[in-house]
Image (cartoon, rainbow, N blue to C red):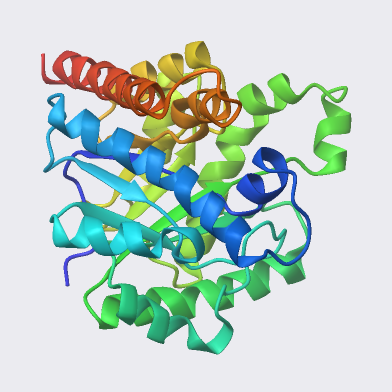
Length: 307
């Protein structure tokens, strides 16, 4: 198969699991069936927002969803039936070290769901624990090989959290880390993972403030003949203004093909609906509006790129 995916890709991600359970609903431990149903119901509101965005003019051929099996199995089924681009996570939620959600049965689950993309979220700092990085890379190579052997697409969400010593050197200033150090570490991480045999079709990347850093990330993602590999920007739960800045910057860079902005799209409307401050329909419409806004920003940046 040809490695990569260089078409436009505008994703509404709501594959959060621990975040919904603990932060949105305040539930700990094993969920009761009615609690699982409540979270699934909240995710249905987001999915309806996605469909409303399509009805409002977002191109179906460019848009997609990212949702988990645990709370979104029915949504994944419906989205596949409608021909939408679907992505499903393979990682166990809220782990510092990548682990398969379904252990050795990961392949059977991917085959059963058959998403457009199998997605992983991985925390990988090249200057972090070498043994953890090595173990993660070995598991991820297994997944990469499995997916490409079955002609399936692989989406890799790369998070590069700071090591204590890195932050200390910057006087514990997280903004300085994001601006000065993280871009270089991301490039290094991409290259290390590629060298370990991990071959994503799409890299899902934390937002970058400078265009030249976006260019360097694409160069790393596309090095040594990986010309079709795409990059998309993730929202990281940031405020609207920050997400707009990241999208505006990335959209002008060839190789950045889209975005995956989740919590900034749905969190506030969903909380307001849950607290009965707005109706379900209002929540759906607000999620759709926000998603359409990100699409518009990215398309405008693409026009600048084309010019």
